[in-house]
Image (tube, rainbow, N blue to C red; front, side):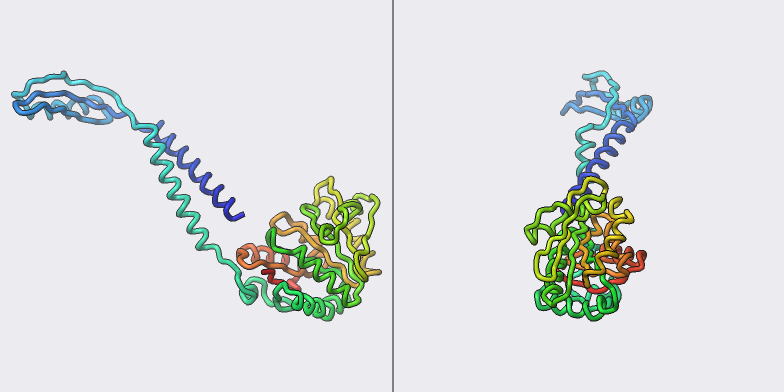
Length: 322
């Protein structure tokens, strides 16, 4: 994404520079050049005088000719109109545009602050309920136990898994946590609410049919019992706008009903980069588990935290997915 952004920025700057160069060329005033060729005893010289006003150009040329009173005139004084070279103006504009674009890109890259280690998340997210952990089996197993004690143990059933950008490993973390809860003997439901780019069904080799999308439009739905204590609701086939589907009252009814047979309901949501879908679940749950990859832009994490605050949802825990 970063490389694509840089290419778009460079292309935009180049196009603007060429447009400005073309406009300046078209609007540039005409220059008049008066010239004459003289024969001197030892050489032949050509005298020229340029000015925006033809009278002024002729006048300057006459002044130069007066300096050679005894010279023979080979070519009578002439006056021609001239403009700047269009290819030269465009080449100069392109060069200046590329230089400006390169400088702007370099400035943005230096300005962009990346999050590389877990402790750098605290200034961005505040103090979450649970400390940041790496996405390793032992750490995720310990995180599942702590979530059971401090989040689900307080009577809560719902926890969405969110991330700032695509490719952060959010779905993989959601699947691993769901399996850890099931292995602990906790009745767990994993819901793929990423209607924009579903992937949970591939982790369990399930067909992406009869899932959340079908439930929201009142079509046949099927929960898949994939492991002991673990059921999965895939995303399903989406025919309408995902955000409009998730905004329907049927979603809240479903989550309330799921809280009866299940002790843990994990929701895999689309990345914040894809849209505000995650905010619906964060608002319903009152919190969210964040997945962050090394090198993530600190500004994007800050914006995600702001959106969670707007939804009155707190960061419950953070998984640093290397």
